[in-house]
Image (cartoon, rainbow, N blue to C red; front, top):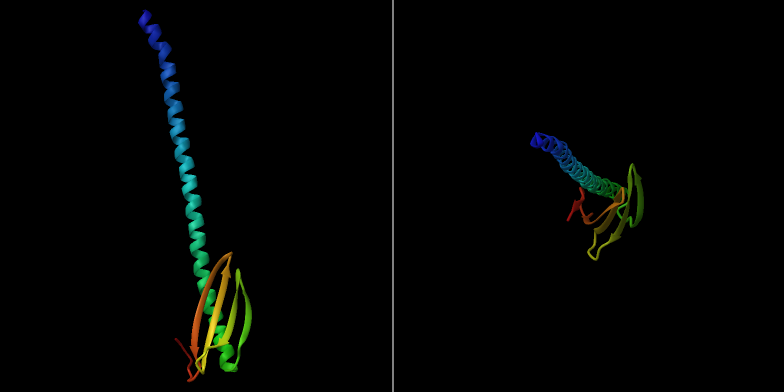
Length: 129
């Protein structure tokens, strides 16, 4: 009879201990899952912004080439505002005749891409070197 009472007394303690361990494991797993999803979201956003900024470089390069089609001797700076970002284009003469150096800096949600192009304007259509 004494054994039955002592066993009954420990059954509640075992169940309580088991529940506390299970709750701690579930809480730690939940926190790890939340932190992983936050890191994934930030990585995805950075990748997306890098791709958008690279697309802006292409758009701004096209704008500068269009300007050079109108005026082959054009040199200067253009600032272009786009949805979610902007870009700055600097067109200058290279040491070689009929070569333009085009520096494009684009920004998309605080992600910046810098590219430099050399454009041969000696013959139409113009060619990038």
